[in-house]
Image 1 (cartoon, rainbow, N blue to C red):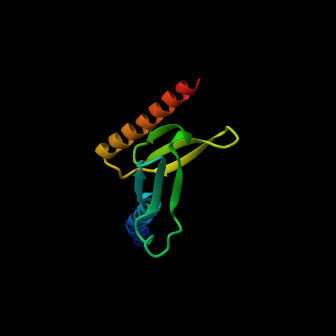
Image 2 (image 1 turned 60 degrees about the horizontal axis):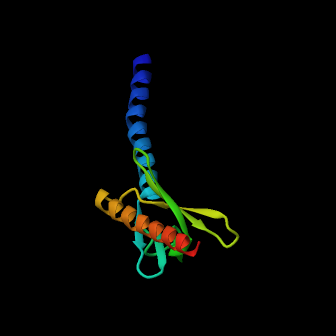
Image 3 (image 1 turned 120 degrees about the vertical axis):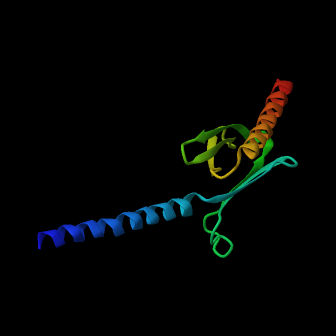
Length: 134
């Protein structure tokens, strides 16, 4: 009888562990798989983050920011093991700096390099304009 109880515990672990892994993996994918769009044409910077799966029908996960290029203070890319974020720091009307966070986990290295180049160019132009006014 004891052998059957031990066998049942082993069988329960065989079903529980993969199911738990699948649930956790599905939750991670749902929370982190996001579409990222960046546009720096003109005098305005546009950042859009939206979910990949059901966002075509229900757009509740969209994270959007649009502001003039002159308000960009600086940015930082945080690269964790399986997660990557872009933090953009924007100057507000009352001379504070606000942080905006975007998920860029699934951008490839070439696109991240282009994003960095574009943001560095905007920051460089902002510093030149500030020095010219002084």
